[in-house]
Image (cartoon, rainbow, N blue to C red; front, side, top):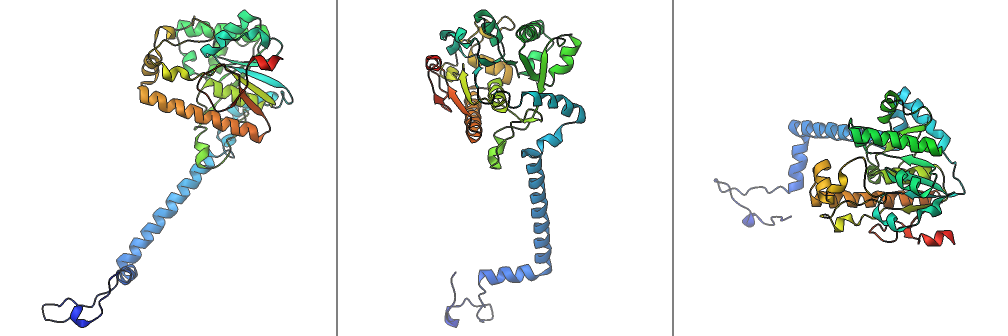
Length: 334
């Protein structure tokens, strides 16, 4: 701040009298003390309090202590059925089986007698290899569309669960549809729903609640759901298979899966980038961003498991996922 030291230094008015130079902070104090200044400060205070109130309301909705309050009474009763899965795997190990092409080179017959949580169409591979899964699950709402291929998927999915006495974990939207199609008579059907995104919890420095008896934080893929379920079920050692994530390095190549050709849709004829464009309207940068968010969500799940003294390892032979420590698949059977 520049101060005027002598009258000779001061600027002069038209009458030749020196101006009195008031420091900027004093001018601010005088302005704040005026009627307009008081009104301005009152309005600012009110806006700040309103903003803080909205932020606190947002935290109550998005933090783990409130998710169970968002479920209706009917939904609450449906989700409470998942309490039967809580802690059933304590002291045991399990395998989370995703559908990446790396599983094509692995001998999955070694999973016979193991606890296995398999996603999407991987029940086809397990059926061929004589493996009885513990849980079969899918997340994508496209499986519930009124299309012939997806209806066949639901028939085969529920039949595979019934034939192997596996739990069938599905999005809540499947419940009424399966009843209308008479597909739940002999199936141990369980349902899930979600609110928000799991990465939102990082903004509040709060661990997301992986409680399947209440709405979950939104999870990016069915494999994230399967890992969250393994944590909820209490498995001490969780070994992940089939999450390669190297499709980002070959976006113009066809989509490959560990179960072979998909008998329910025509995804196999599309390149990775074409599939993202067709089903999500995403270009390559958007695909990369979504993949990065998936990886951060895997890291978040790894931290949650570690806090519960549960260990997740990546048993893939390759791929780009480095959120978990690696452990060779063959070494798990020595």
